[in-house]
Each structure stands twice: as C-alpha cells, then as structure tokens.
Length: 202
Ligand SMILES: [Fe+2]
Ligand SMILES: [Fe+2]
Image (cartoon, rainbow, N blue to C red):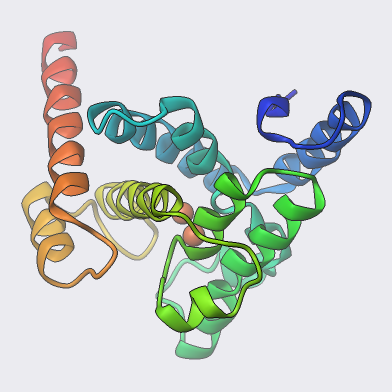
C-alpha cells in the first residue's frame, strides 16, 4: 500500500486512516496516470536533488500531482485523440480536485500547494487561496511542472510520438512561464545521466 504518512499532518492514529483513505484514491487512478505519476516522481526527485532541495518532498509531490484525475471522466481522460477545447477545460480542473483531495486527506500545504499550481500559477491564483504560499512551495511547483511536461512529451502517447529532448527544452525555455533556468538545467543533467545509464545497459 502507498505510504505517505510523513507528509500527513494529522495525529498518529488518524495519519494511518488518512493514508489508507488516500491510497484508495491512488488505486482508482487509471494505469497510464499511475505510470506517469511514478515517472514524474523519479524526475522530480532527480531535479530536487540537483538543486539541493528535499528529494523526498519533491518525489511525493510528483507521485500525487495528478490525483485529481480520479474525478475526470475516463471517456475524456482515455480518449486516444487530441482533446477539444471543452474537454481540455474539464481535464484542467484536476489540479484543483487534487488540492481538495490532498487537503481532505490531511496532507501538508508543502504538498497540496504545488499540486494546485502544477499547470498554472498566476498572481490571481495566489490571491484566491487562504494559505500562505512560500518561495519553497513555488520552487517545488516549478520542479513538478517541468518533470510533468518532460515525462508527458518524451513518452509515447496515443496522439503523439515521443518529442525530442531539444524540442522540449526549447519550449520550456521560450514558451513556459513556470520553468526557470536552474530547474531546467537540473532536468537536463538528470536526463543526460539517465540516457548514459540506458546506453550502458544496452
Ligand atoms: Fe496534471
Ligand atoms: Fe501529470
């Protein structure tokens, strides 16, 4: 069973209950989202490690970042073609659902705030929530965002083939307001290490 108790802020007995409650949500995710989440966890850990941040925190955020997809209809989530603008709007709500689920399960703000903002972060968003948002939470948001984009675009999807690393990096440099040079270069380092290990294994 998934064990994230260290990041649940309730007292000891209810931490157990909260963790098993959360595990039910995680089990309900579809297979592709689970696989994607495991990969985003690994990449987020690699980036955080290179930036001198807590690897475990980044990994947990990566693992749970798409938990809100349990509330998106499979008909839309598993569609093997590009989504229509309306379908996209529906899918985009998963960040908010994730925030609600994680809060309900007693997770700490250092986990649920980056989940809430992992696709978009504007000043109006920061003003619309009651919790204080620290610089560290924003950095974890950037990490999970970059890890998420890299994983989604570099993998095979029903509607696209894997995109080359250089193209992803270019987009993350020019067209992405959540990506920053330090996070991006940590991602690049992680990817080249991975590629090196893949080559050695062949
Ligand atoms: Fe997401
Ligand atoms: Fe994702």
